[in-house]
Amino acid sequence: MLIHQYLHQLKLCARNRTLTTAKSLHAQIFKLGITQCIPLANTLVNVYGKCSAAAHALQLFDEMPHRDHIAWASVLTALNQANLSVKTLSMFSSISGLLPDDFVLSALVKACANLGSIHHGKQVHCRFLVSEYSHDDVVKSSLVDMYSKCDSPDSAKAVFDSIRVKSTISWTALVSGFAKSGRKEEALELFRNMPIKNLYSWTALISGFVQSGKGLEAFSVFTEMRRESVDILDPLVLSSIVGACANMAASIAGRQVHGLVISLGFDSCLFISNALIDMYAKGSDVIAAKDIFSRMRHRDVVSWTSLIVGMAQHGQAEKALDLYSDMVSHGVKPNEVTFVGLIYACSHVGFVAKGRELFQSMREEYGIRPSLQHYTCLLDLLGRSGLIDEAEKLIRTMPFPPDEPTWAALLSACKRQGKGQMGVRIADHLLSCFKPRDPSTYILLSNVYASASLWGKVSEARRKLGDMEVRKDPGYSSVEVRKETEVFYAGETSHPLKEEIFGLLKKLEKDMRRRNGYVPDTSWILHDMDEQEKEKLLFWHSERSAVAYALLKGVPGSPIRIVKNLRVCGDCHVVMKHISEITEREIIVRDATRYHHFKGGKCSCNDFW
Image 1 (cartoon, one colour):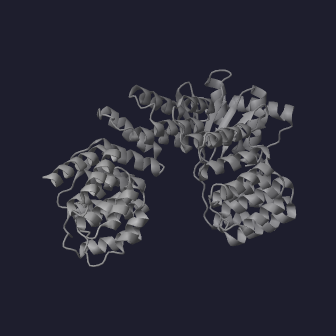
Image 2: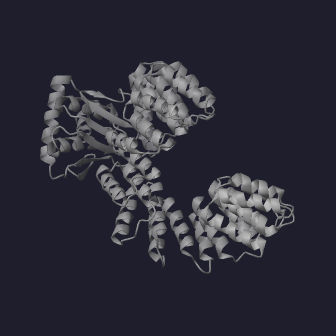
Image 3: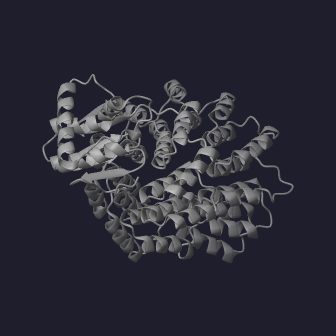
C-alpha cells in the first residue's frame, strides 16, 4: 500500500514537473529503505527526466542493481530531453544481454534525430527490423521523424508507407521533411491528403518552407491557415512566419504579423520578440528593432545578439560595440553569432585593434572556436584597413580551407588598395584552383586583369564564364511604396510608369554627369557589345528603376528601402550615392551580400563590398 501511494505521488510530480516535491519524496523513500524497489526506482528516474533533472536521473540509474527495459527507456528519454543525445547513444552501446524493446528503440531513434545523424539512425533502424517489435507503428513514426530531420524525405516516405495506422504525428513529420527539403509540390500534396490537420501540422509545413527559403509559399499557407480559422494556441507558427518576413525583408507584411502577435497576446513571448528584432533589423528598421528590445522584460543571448548584428549590418558599429559592453555587464555570455556581428562591425569603421581583441577573447575568455565565418570577417577587417599581407597570411594559416568567397574578398581588397601584382597572383589562383559559382567573381577577375593590362587573361575570364555555363538568376529589385510592394526586373521596359521612370533617370543621370563628373563604368558588363549598349544595360538595372519609382510615388522625404536578389554592381553603387545626394533622400539597399545605407553621397559600406 505504501509503495502504491509513493508511486501515485511521483506520477503527479512527473505530470506537474514539480522537482522539489520529487526530491522530498525520494528522500522519504531512501529513509524507508525501499529505493531498491524496481517500480519506485524506475518511476523516480522517469520523474527526474520529466523535471529536466537528467543528472539526478543518471545518478539514480547508475545506483540501480537491476535495470530493466523501463529503466533504460526512462534514462535514455531523460538524456534526450536534456539535449544529451550523444550520451544516449554511448550509453546504449554499453548494454549487454538486454535486447531493446519498442520504448528503448524509440528513445534511440529520437537521439539520432536530435543529432541529425543518419548513419546512427540507419544502424538503429536495422536493429529494429530484426527485432520482435519490427511492426511497431510508434517506432516507425519516430523513424519517419528521424529521416525527415536528416534531410532524407524519401526514406521517411518508405517507412511511412509501412505504417498500418498512420497518426497525425507521423503525417506531420513527413510533411515537414518534404517542406524542409524544398520539395514544395510533394509537401503540399501530402498536406492536402492529411485526414486530420491541427496547428502543429500547419506549423510544420510553414516552418519547413521558411527553412528551405520558400518564404512566399510559407506566407501563402499561413494566409490559408488564417482563413481556415485555426486557433493559434502555440506561438511557434508566428515565430516561423516572422522569420519568413525577415528573410524577404517584407516590412509591410511583417508589421501586419506583428499586429497579430500583439492581438493574440504573444508579444511578451521571448522567442517571438527575438524574431521580431531580427525581422525589423533585416527590414532596415533598426529603430523598431531597438524599441522591441527596450520593451523586453527578459532578454537572452539571442535578444542581445540579434540587435548587435542588426546594428553592425547597418553600419552602426559604435552602437553595436556599446551594446556588447552592456550585454557583458548584464552577465549574458556571448555566442558564436555575437562575435560574427562584432568583428563585422569593426570592419566597417576600421577598428583593427578592437577586432583582433574580440577575436582573441572569443577563444581565450569564452572558449569559442572561430569558424570560417569569423576568419572571413577578420579578413574583411584587415583588407578594409589596408593590411593586405596580413590578410593573405591569415588565409594561408587559418584551420579551414579557404573557399571562393574568401579568396574573392582578398582579391577585392587588393583591387581597392592598389596591390596590382598581388591581385594578379591571387586572381590566377582563383581562376586555376576554383570553378567560381558567383558571376561577380568573374567580373572582379576581369577587372583586376584589365587594371594590369592583361587582356589575354581578361578574355580568358570572360570565356570561362561562358564555358562553365555560369548563369545569373534574373536580377530584380523590390521597393515598398505607400503600403504596396513593386518589383522591377533588369531591363524591364513594360512598366505602366515606364516613361516617367525613364525621364527621371535621364534627368538624374544628367545631374550626376554635371555635378559629380559621373561616367558609367561599363567594366561591370561582360557581354561582348559596344559601349553604348553596355551603358543602356546599366541604365536599366533593376535597383535604378526601383529608386526612380519610389521618388515618383513615395512619401516625400521618407527613406527608400529596396531589396535586390543579386549583389549591387559597382556602377549602380556609385549612382545610388549620387542620387542620395542630389535628392537629399536616404536610400537603403539590401542586396545578396550586405546592407547599403546611402545618404548625402556616401554609403555605410565605405565603398567596400
